[in-house]
Length: 479
Picture: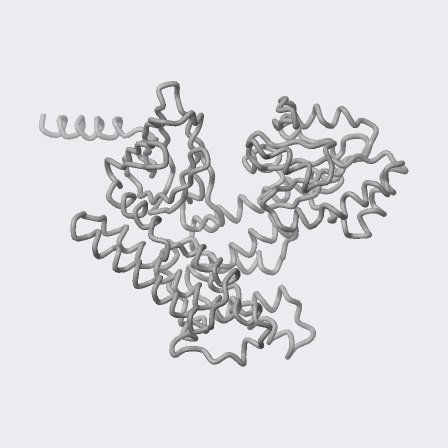
């Protein structure tokens, strides 16, 4: 009887654990008191630290102003919450049940994770704790190098002092305290690495000739930066970019037969170890196949040989599979999911990629996917206008699709920057559209060429100022 009761209790326990409950996620519920927002976006949260980029997830707001969402995370993760034009940092841990009240521009937190997010919300109001604002001031204001390093010291000290004051009245989770300590260290290293670089470029001075304050160069070696514990912070792996690039250039200078790719790989293998090395290689693979639209067989082979982290392997498998699927699309008609991607024209009429391409049947279509906030996108527009004028007598159509959200000033600004009111559209879901997902478009500008028969010619076409583009378009138009 005793054994039977134990077995029944065990079965009851197992059956009560649904797949959702077994998964690692944080729940965010909330209410909007004074806004007509239809949705809340949660951006940059990573399901696991190995993910190269965080995801954007959307919670719909019902007629009573309520919203709810489960965000999958395996460990503590920091991201952003956006409501209309307001953006605020959030930090979530598995199992959190966070309640958020949005009242105009203010937020109130309750439930698990409330204290941690209340602290971040308070910290965002401290100007000297805004890292982006600090770096922006380096470019827009005149500072001595000593001033810049003092600003970094102040930034770190104020973060620590604000935390100490908050802890006197509130209890914070140990996991968050550990995360915040690491984030502060990563910010410090990042700022120290970049201060002298920004100063040298702005003042046109050789970076090696600068007299740095004591201790300012303490993070110039791989060993001084590497620590696998830091992997919970999204910016950690990026700290190695300049170190890898600098060492790779040295090796290429001493061995002219060495390619850039092989030089970087040799630096990674010689200078890094553990999960830091795996994450760095994974990030390099990811950027190759998603941004550079190329692969490096030697890098991929080496990664799989040294791989021990399951998350890293699964992500590499996924991204390489997507890359192969994307390459297979070349020369074929666009997939149905791409054709059904929703957009709006400049009169806010809803339509699809299929509907747009149907308008230009028999023509070569050059898609310019861009954003008003993208400097290179804006800089390319004069060249695009000239090329369009040069090819005006050809069966070629220039079509512009922005990832920007709807706003009162969107279309006037789009017309002004693109120097055209013709063929202007915006994606209904920005970077989250099916077109972006299937073609792994994570940055703008991106240019796509579709031939007269609706077949994909290139998902990584040349920019308008490249003479090769004109030749390619003319060749396609003449077929």
